[in-house]
Amino acid sequence: MGARKHHQPRRGSLAYSPRGRAKSMEARIRAWPKLDSDEPRILAHCGFKAGCVQIVSIDDREKTPNAGKQLVSLGTVLVTPPLLILGIRGYSKDHYGLHAEFDVYAEDIPKYITKEITLKNKEGALEHAEKRLGKIKEIFAIVAVSPRAAGLEQKKPYVFEALVSGGNIQKQFTHVKELLGKEIKIDQIFELGSTVDVAAITKGKGWQGVIQRWGVKKKQHKSRKTVREVGSLGPISPQSVMYTVPRAGQMGFHQRTEYDKRIMIIGNTDNDQIKINPDGGYKHFGLVKGDFIVLKGSVPGTYRRLIKLRSQIRNVPAKVLKPNILEVVV
Image (cartoon, rainbow, N blue to C red):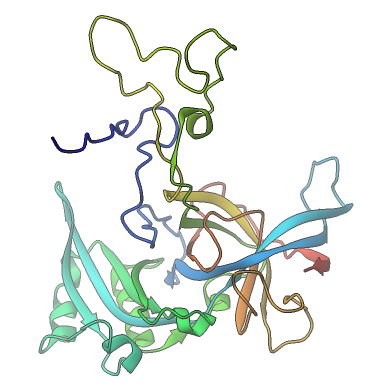
C-alpha cells in the first residue's frame, strides 16, 4: 500500500490555511493597488534579507502617548540591487479573467540573463503590441534581479512581473518602453518614509504536531494516553474528520504577505553617513554592499531569501513623512 496522504484543510478554514509547503522560493503577488496619478510608475521592487538592527528615532505618529519622544524599534536590513527591465507584457480581460496578449523584450539583454533564461522577440513584436493596446486592460513590466548583485552565490536570476499603474494604457506602455534594457534602483520606485507591503516565503520548520502548529492546549496529566494530541477528532457520526480539526503537518515555508512596513532608511554602503554593517558582517549573510533599505519591524523569511516589495495597498496615508533617525545600532 502507498503512503497515506496527509489531509490539508481547505482554503478559508481557520487561520492561514492550507499550510502546505510553498511551490517556489519566490513569493507571488496576486493583488495590486491602483494609482489615481496621471504619471505611470512601476509598483514593485525586491531585496534580499540580510539581518536586523535597532533604530533609534523620534516617534512622528500623531495622537500616540509616545508622540515626539524617542523610540527604539526593530529594523530589517534588505539588500536591494537594481532591477533590470527585461520586457513588457499586456493583459486583456474577459469574464474568464486575464489573458496575456503580447510580450516585448529588450534587445540587448545581459549574458547572465540569456545564459539562464531564453527570451526572444518575435518579428515586429513592438509594432504588434502597439496595435493591440486598445484591448489591453493592464500593463506589466517584466523585471529581473540577480542574487549575485547582492553578494549571494546563486547564479540564476529571479524574473517576475510588476504592475505599471497611473495614467492610461498608452502612457504606461510608453513608460516601460523607455525603460527597456535599463536598470532601476529602489529610490526610483519608493521614497523614504513611505510604506510598503512585503511578500516572502517564511522560514521552514518541518513536520510539527498540533501543539506547536496550531496552539492546541495540552491535555491534563493522566487524563488520556497522550498529552500532546487533540482531545477529539470529531463526533462518532458522521464518521469523518472535519477540515477544521487541527492536525499535525508541515509548519513554515509558506507564502505570506505582511502589510504596512515603513521604509526608515534608503542608503548605499559607498556613502559613509550610515554604518549599516556590523564588524565581520551579518551572520549567515556577510557584508551588505551597494543599495539597501531598512524596514521598520520584522519581515517573513530567513536570511538571503528574496523579499518582494509592493506599493501599499491598505491604509494609504495622505502624505509621506520622512523619519527622524537619531541612531542605528548594528
